[in-house]
Image (cartoon, rainbow, N blue to C red; front, side, top):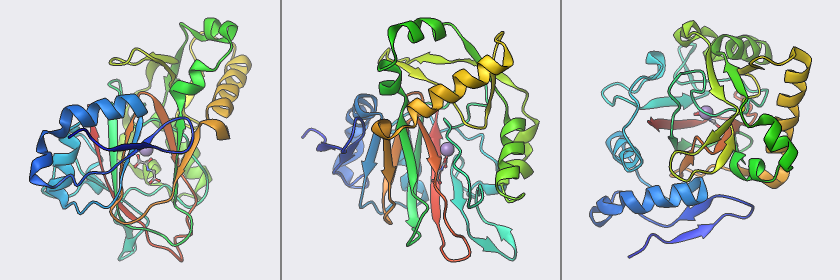
Length: 280
Ligand code: OGA
Ligand code: MN
């Protein structure tokens, strides 16, 4: 039976109706991967996944990346990371970026090898706030005027975890886990500004509101202005889907075709817990 898919409202994304732990569904890898490449974002609600199940779900999409921040790695399940605003004995139990500012990004763009897809599985959801917003960087690129496409075709941008850590720390009053993390020792890396997707061939804008430092070889003011314009276009409402989490939601995104950001959540009032896996 083909995977039942319903497009989300907007320009990208689809909801898949499937129980990923049902024994008959182990052979769905090709369908799931095809659906991800077709829609760039998959919402798979109503799952009951333990840690092993989440790793098995990730494996449908590719080899799981086990190089995760050790402080928030889930013990015994290499590749799983805790994303949470919950503290125990004054320590954050998961990756936490503060309650304040949006930070549009593609995961791990500060690393030389780009992450192909990420899965987030929701366990505890806040009654208010804490949505994740996704932008269709592929459709946003496709809609650019031809002259602008030509102007940016061969540009490269520098991505810096140090800059991300600094800006996130400033935005969150020192609360960000990136700032405190060991990842802040990564050297800067360069990526194309326009990615050609390795499977679909579609062009996509690889941007980041905090992690992208400048465009190589461009006047700094011009670089800043161009990056700001492209980000504003890509994250403007026609290209954005806002996901309001329910417990049991599994969301998968094509990290080479989309951007995303957490949304503010008042951690003094609401708890939030998700688990993440990325694939290479
Ligand atoms: C992530 C991420 C957003 C969120 O885990 O990579 O960006 O809303 N999460 O928690
Ligand atoms: Mn992310």
